Image 1: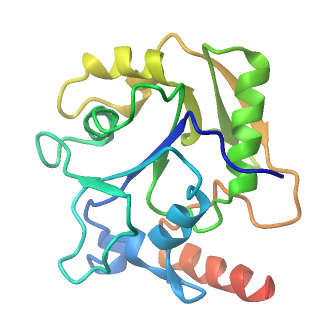
Image 2: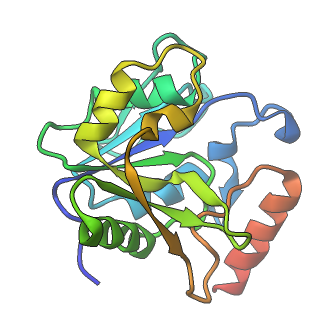
Length: 204
């Protein structure tokens, strides 16, 4: 289906205290022999920039060459400020930015291309997000116009909710109709992780 466009960047939000996983960072959980973060970075491999925002465990594997890792300013100030920090490392020529949590084991290049194609068809000032099976918009599984995202992010204060990043942006919703596991599926609980590992085994 082709490579990701050269004017596309991805910001991946990691860190935080995963109390349901005994403090283990969700992005470092292993699904089918790779951490979720490794799987996500592979899905975004064709992007012009891949920016990981947040603290990682001291024993975490090094990130692939070219991936930027930064800490939100100030540390622990929430996803909106994390995106603001990440945008500082997105090249100016990028017109689209994906904002993603660090716990999506089934994100794929095909899913990103579907989001990008939907947003581009609707116009340069429009974003696109996946909807889950209940019709809920997955705000942190979408792509956004970089300029509008930068303008909104410039005003967010520490602790501000992520939804403020998307104020005033027209949004297209996308349903994953493929038989493969949905790219919006996140590992919030041990049960989610078990499901992800079962699906991954079934894909072999």
